[in-house]
Length: 64
Image (cartoon, rainbow, N blue to C red):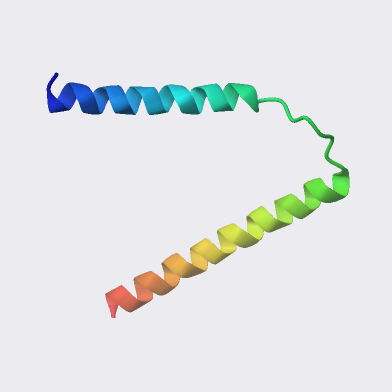
């Protein structure tokens, strides 16, 4: 078995494992209240804002 075949095997096995995990957890087991749903949305927006600020800071430092 060549290195390329071994690498392809490792990658395909990993991808199959990820697909299996995604299938297992496709449906949530607990109910999410509206307050939790809103809190998670606010958290997601906050994290995206932080990533945007980090990218902006990186750009300004690199371009100077």
